Length: 410
Image (tube, rainbow, N blue to C red; front, side, top):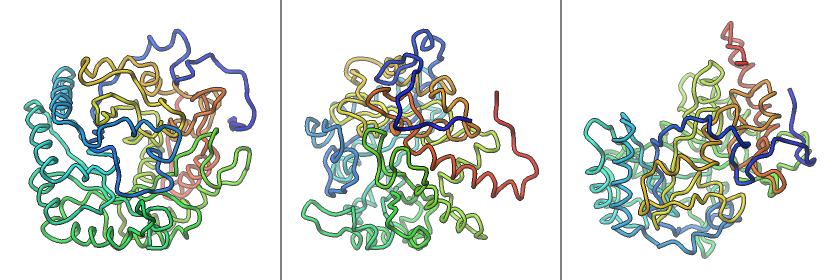
């Protein structure tokens, strides 16, 4: 196994600095159709979270986007999704309403948009609609519209009030936890409880991990998604210093894992469940870990097609494909070099990652977190040591109960 030394440049295969594969390898990747579509229906937000990759990091393209997706762009997006599903004979599609803050589009607009989207999905294709929201606009009227259209609702909550309000404040600096908590009380009560998809929580090393987890448990979420704060080798996340052997994020997550794993009843903590699934030789349903080909496409509010939205953390324009729903089918995005690299499995990760003992589980880490100014995305994640430590801990924890885990594929 080789660990990546974040501070030292090293010789490597020549790759497209925007994230493409080495010459000659791109043509050997069989594109996997998109099945998840992130629609940036609103490009502005009513919070000013200091860790937000959209507004606070390298890419500032949100300033050029329409505040709300125009109806003609929405209609064409719906047609393109239906066309893609029909062309590739998909059995299901997942449409995620995102932003900014998607609920800023308004209840009436969202109701019409969902009607339009559903009408374009071919018969025999199962649609799943999800909205990811900060919760501030999740009132009874909005919940009624979302229930009518069977939209699953994910809410961002970073833990108790002190933890949440450290970062998630309004533009005027006002706290948001109380309003989010009130929204969650509405969402988790009848008749809306069935809409609740789960909670999204960004890890903050300042917070005591188990107390954060137990605060999230108060709402009985079906799923909890712990996210590592976005960062790269060029702009490391808080507490993650290049060449530092410490693993603060692994330590934080391990404390939560141990509390979660020992419980008789527990929600699905997606990062832990995905790692366990991968340890048994399964496929990942998230880009955060594993080698499963990426199947997510982002549509900005002006109709432009982009790669993983979090690529905005790397540099201005990192997510750009140069394509739009107005100029051609979504299949054109499947030819983009960086998308091919993210569908290439082992061939799409750095040489150091290909030699690692947890290669098939880690998968090189989340693609945006691999960026360095000198070698582009041809690197392990800036969280390399944290991921290695976390995966080893989970592997050792479950190995105590399971006699045999599959060997790494050669």
